[in-house]
Structure formats: structure tokens, C-alpha cells
Image 1 (cartoon, rainbow, N blue to C red):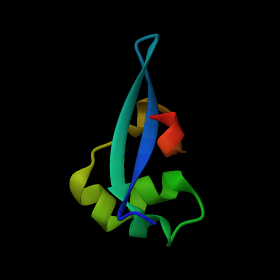
Image 2: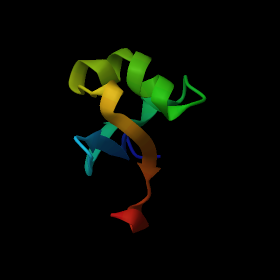
Image 3: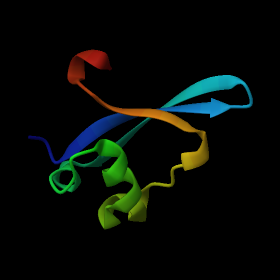
Image 4: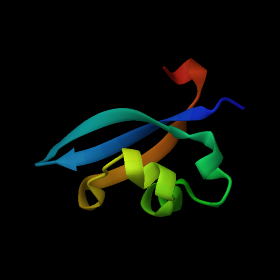
Length: 67
């Protein structure tokens, strides 16, 4: 497994939707069953990423074929 994984975040923004792709440490995923819990609670993720949770609609891991 790579040391980082790509995550696609979908936000609702005033009736429009926008997608942001970010990377997070792969090791952060190991302690959580759900990706959203990792994004909200993992200290390593919180140090480097701000997520506007009220506008977040979905978060999903992105494979290399999805780039």
C-alpha cells in the first residue's frame, strides 16, 4: 500500500456541487471502519486537511483508474 491514498470529496455549495480531490496518510485508514470517521477524527488527517462537514455530501477512496 502506498503511504498516501486519494480521496474524492463532493460538496454541495449553494445549489451547485463541486469535487475536491485530496490525499491523506494511508496509515490513518487502518484505525477506522468508515472513511468519514477517519476524516473527522484522525489527528494526522486533521493536522493537514480542513473539511467543511456541513457541505460534505460524500467521500470516497479514489483508485488509480479513477484519476
